[in-house]
Structure formats: C-alpha cells, structure tokens
Image (cartoon, rainbow, N blue to C red; front, side, top):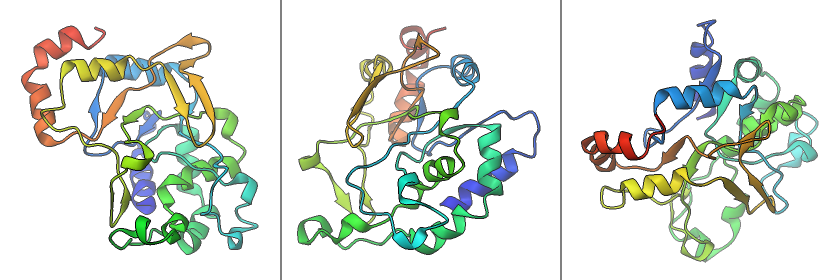
Length: 240
C-alpha cells in the first residue's frame, strides 16, 4: 500500500500545477461540490493529516531506531490531503520508508483473533503510521492540520467487527444512505480524538468550518441512490 501511494504521488507531482494531493478510497463520496472542496483545501496552507501520539501504542519496534525514534512515532488515518512540499517529502524519502518495509508489516489475522489472544495488538499497519511518522521525523508537524477530512463511522469498542484483515468502519448501503444522513455528517464541527484524549473544533486560521469533505464506506448501491437523488441532493445538501 505504501509503495502504491508513493507511486501515485510521484506521478501526480509530474504536473507542476498540482498543488494539493488527496488520497481517497474507492468507497468514498464527496459531501460537497467540487468548488467548495477546492476552496476548502486551497484556503488552508497546510496538509490535512490525521496524526497523534497513541499512549497505548504497542506497534513501535525499537529496532527502528535511530531512523525512527519512539518519540516521533505517530498514528492516524491513511486518508490525507497534502500540500506539494509534503508530497515531495514522501516521494524523496529514502530513510523512513525502508525501515517500515522491514519492521512494520501487516499480519494476516486468524479468525476470532481478538477473542483468542491479544497478539493482534502488535500487528503493525504501515499506512496508519508511515506518513504521520515521516512528517514528525522531518519536523514538519507545524505545517499540518492534525485531522483528516474523510469521515468514517466506527462502532463502539464492544461492537467492533473484525475479519482476517482487522477492524473496519461501518459500511453505508443504499438503505442507510439518505439525505438526512449526509446532512448529519456535514453538520459535524468537532472531532473527539479518543486515543489522543483530545477534542477539537474544526476550522482554519480561526474560521469555523465543517470537519469533513468526504465520507466512507459507501457501497455502489449507495452511490447509485445518491446519483438518483442528485437534484435534491444538490438543493438540500450542497452549499452552492
């Protein structure tokens, strides 16, 4: 996954006019129209990268030092919006990435791993740590908004669904995809970072703004339903 992201950024950087680099999944939908999203990310001169120190982290491997120090180890969502400077830093990285290749690997989990034992806790998920840790190691954290702009709905801890790949957010199918649900996500203006024990209102340079520009995970059926409701969707949900 990391190598794929680096190749995507490398290709996007070939165009000198590209100033923002957004990674989304194929199950994402936009919460606003293109103009609003463009203005939002261009207005902010920082990258949007969900990044925090996890006080309960067990994934860091001390063999990563000195290329990666424990105090610089970060965690967060893999979906990002990068300014050009940070995209270049990812593509040119020849120090942190090789260490991740060697010491941070996703393990195929057996069924019911969580209930059988706790070894799954040390399963290192590279795309939840690499970008955040790289920016910390490069002392670039003051140049990011430490939050993502892609919404995911997670079940409570005791309701988490786990498969061989690990935890996954709730999937929105056609039945769950309503204009009211979309408006509810749009109305979120504060984020509670549970692992980091912090709560923040969303905004840029003191200007209050919605937290999210995109949302996931939506099925194809859900996307089709939104397309069918496109006129009403634009009228009731999109800002202009």
